[in-house]
Each structure stands twice: as structure tokens, then as C-alpha cells.
Image (cartoon, rainbow, N blue to C red; front, side, top):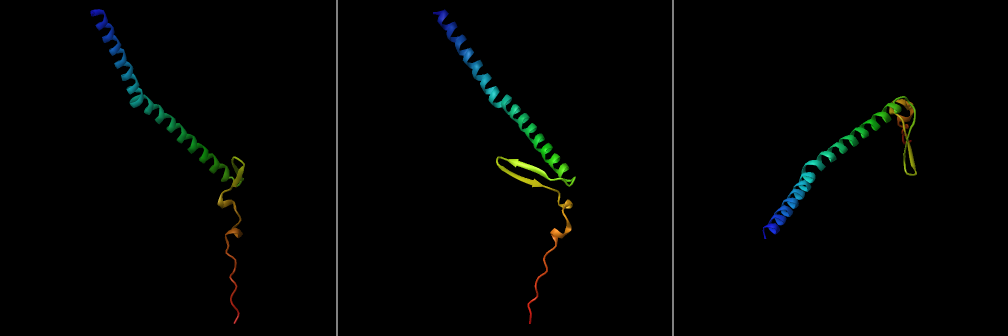
Length: 94
């Protein structure tokens, strides 16, 4: 009888330890890992954007490709001023 009690107590202790480990992972370890990954993703995004901006500032077209769609980016300062002038409006004749 005492042997069965010891086995049952040992089994319950093991279950409690396993459940405590699972809860520790869910509430302590996983958020830390997720925060680290998100931080690295944000650094990668910032690096990519700054690299694109630096290349565009040299007045070179920067191709951005997504799937089968491509667009070219260039700094506005590199475009000729004629592109920003409004066409002259035609005055109505009297």
C-alpha cells in the first residue's frame, strides 16, 4: 500500500513539474524569443529602407521587385524641374 502511495506521489510531482515547465515556457521564455525575433525583423526593415534611400539619393533608379511586379524608385531631387511645372491654362477667347 505504501509503495502505491509513493508511486502516486512521485507521478503527481512529475506532472506538476512538467506543467510548471510548460507554463514557464509559455509566459516567460516564448515572449523573450518572440521579442528578440521581432527586434531583429525591425532592424532588417530599417536597414533595407535606409539602403534603398541611399541608393536612390545617388540619382540611380532602384528596382523593387515583388513577385512579377517591378517598380523603379528615384529621389525626387534627381528629376528634372520641368516635370513639376503645371501646363499653362488656356484663356477663354472673348
